[in-house]
Amino acid sequence: MSNRSSLDQELALLRGLIAEMANHVDAQFADAMNALLQGDTELAEQVVAGDDAIDALELRIDEQCERILALHAPVAVDLRMLIMAVKINTDLERIGDHCRNLSRNARHLADAPGLLAQTRLPKMADMSRTMLREAEDAFLENDRLKARKVIARDLQVNRLHDETFTTLVGMLEEGHEQAEALSHLLTVSKALERISDHAKNVAQGIVFMVEGRDIRHRGLEGEEEKSVSDGEQADASAGEVSGREG
Image 1: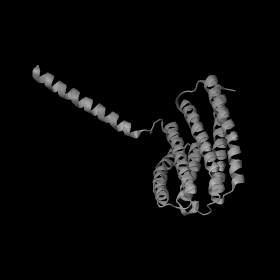
Image 2: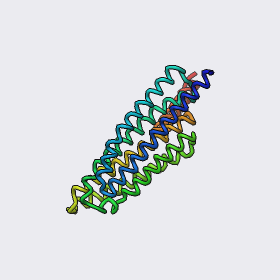
Image 3: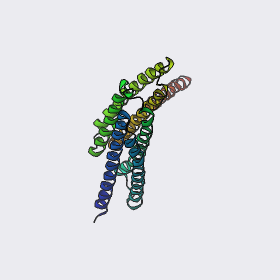
């Protein structure tokens, strides 16, 4: 077997493990939200227990990345794939952690049936889960355009989080009788916002993997371009002065 063929097999195994991780995290997310909406503490406990499987997959993916690096010393697009696999692995594991934390709020909301449904949280959850699933599809298909759509969705989730935060704080300030439940809903909203952030990170990694361009912190690119432009203008001005002096 050629080295290229062996590397392709190892990379295919890595992609399969990441897809398995994403599917497991997606199932955890769905169960966590169902536990919250239905006040199902038993399902919530299953989600908490299921986090161990995600942690085990994280270790397997890291080990596979180390194996590929040690055996094949990949370059170019293969190296980008490996770099982003490590980052995506971390983001998926953290989404799993947030799903576990979401579930831990279920018992606190069980005595406040219907309260969560009165907020924008179900819509936030739907959008965050859509981002996660589309990010997985973009990864499997090497689809940079789909990845960019995931990134754009994050702004919508952020707006919903801001609206929800304002609404819940207002209800607390008005002395709502279910103040404890409201405080846990604030935690839920922040967890959903963080899940969408991690899905966005995955999508940004896919763009880098396909295009070779790091689109994080894009504002810095503008600052860098401005600095270069300013520097060029300064050099030109200095040359004009030098020419006049000569």
